[in-house]
Structure formats: structure tokens, C-alpha cells
Length: 236
Image (cartoon, rainbow, N blue to C red; front, side, top):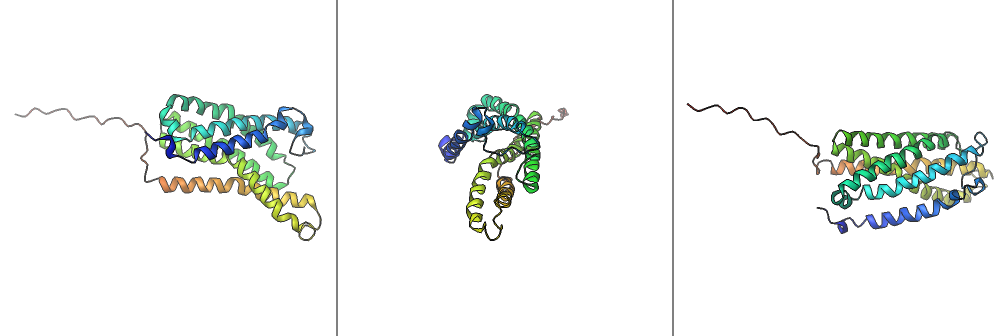
């Protein structure tokens, strides 16, 4: 049994998620499009906000439940709760948030590079989560664990995306009048595109590195049927 204190990363991770969700949700609980932190693209208008609201709310469910799901102590100590929260993560988190993200990403006001990243991220998010669910249904728990680590990396990418966004805005702003010729819209497009791609590719690469590093350490816990013994042959 894994001791909960042997995973010291769980406390700062949970704190980051709580702070991020507490900061992200309030503007959308007002149901006032004027409070949105994302500009409305002309092609969608106010409909963009009404897709953004469920995306933020269901995405927050995915973030919160994911923290519990990847905690080894919780999985081992409370397997029934792990399964139930896993269903909530998928049905009440990733699935609706990912479907909204597909439309939001396809009409993002931050340019084609960001659009391509957002749509690909949404597809991968839905795909890795579905693959993890399918592996669990087939009782291939080693595969389930690997797919869900990838899914968590993509879930958490919304946080790293915001961090990269702040980094690029700070580093590129001094070049507004030189590199970008005073075009704030172009600077916003470049910063958003760079943050969008790095926001999910780096966490996914880190997840793959972790999986490769631990591949040979952890046996696949899939259930196996005991081999049938041959019938006894009487000794003359």
C-alpha cells in the first residue's frame, strides 16, 4: 500500500488546481458575456460565450477529479471511489468540455496557428480519455493507466498554456514597435499560438518520458487466467 505522504507532489498540484479554478470560474458564473476573458469571434458572436461557459465549468470538473485520479494512495485505498470519480471525470468533465473545445477552437479569434492547436488538442484529449476508458472496460489496467496519464497531461495543459501565454506576452511586448511594427493584434496572435502549442505538447512529452522511464519497472496488472493443469496420469 502506497503511503499518501510518499507522493509530496500531490499537495502543491492540488493547490495549483484550486487556485487556477478559483481564478477562472467567477467571470462565467455571472452568465454575462461582457465578463468573458476571451474576445468573441464575429463568426460566432454571443454563441461563443455560451459554448465557453460549459467548457470552463466542465473543464474545472475534469481538473479537480483528475487530481484525485492520479493520486496512487487514493486509487489503492479507495478503488470504488476511484472508479466512480473516473466516470465523472469522463462523462461530467472531459466529454462535454472537449466537445465544446472543438467548436471554440475552430473559431478562435487568435489566428490559424492557434486554431490548429486548439482543435488538435481537443481531439487528443477526447481520444486519450476514450482509450483509457476502453482499456479499463477490457480490464487492461496497465494500458488504462498509461492512457489516463496522457489524458491528465492534456487536462492540465490549460494551466501551462496560461503560464506560457504570460511568458510570451512579457518577452514579446518590448518588440511591439520593432518586430511587430506596432501591430498589437499580430503580437497577440504570435504569443497565443506559441503558448497554445507549447501548452500541451510539453506536458504530453513529459508524460511520455515518464511512461517510458517506468515501463520496465511496473508489471501490467491485467488479470490472467490460471493455466489449466494437465490431467494426472496414474503411475503403474
